Length: 284
Image (cartoon, rainbow, N blue to C red; front, side, top):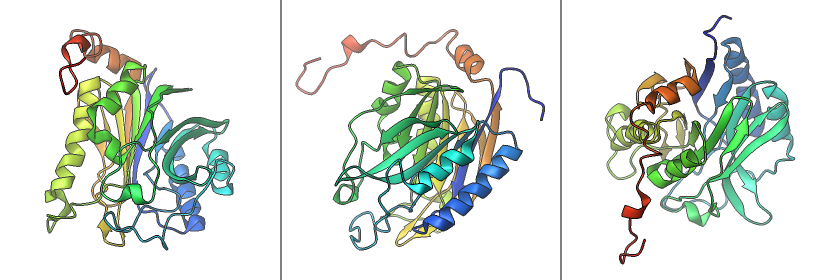
């Protein structure tokens, strides 16, 4: 499969994943095979790929939680084996030694490349998951990357901290539902649908990075997920996207060249003026 020199193919997945781990592994295998046939180098699956997300954000049912896994669990070892030379990001419920985390891993056939525990927790998520406390980029064969999960992208500081530490690609894995309080009859008109797209483009443009946004689709309990997976360029332009249904958005891009080009005149990270920012109370 021919491609321009220096480019890579990035795939963002919109798909539904529930509690059934065997079914999830079979679905992942099909998606990975399709991605590999399309020459994808980086594949970003949704938040809660293994075991699904919560069924109710305000009052989570403690009897119906995602299964807790460790990095030694069969399902995670199976995805590592599938990956080969591809880099795959996926979400799971991490058994953190008596605490459950909403977590993501980046893996290749060589093993785990990067980890993230979701930091920012909406509504009642804190009743189920402990919160992470850091955003840490990591090196991969495709370049330096960072990961965020879902609500993390609402906070500009999260993506900015990764960019300042050299991440040129950011994967944001989501299980992002339609509005709980003001749901539209059609998903594209839903308030959360608009915000989901807005945050994706804004975080890419603010930091002049390549942004890869995956999401769940379908229904889990009282939550209806938006889909809308996409790859966004460093100018905030959407290079490829899916609809609210399942799909794989693929974009071919020379990450280093496009990031450098976007920063040629206006370099947001170099032109920051942290001394002008103050915390509440007037202290810097």
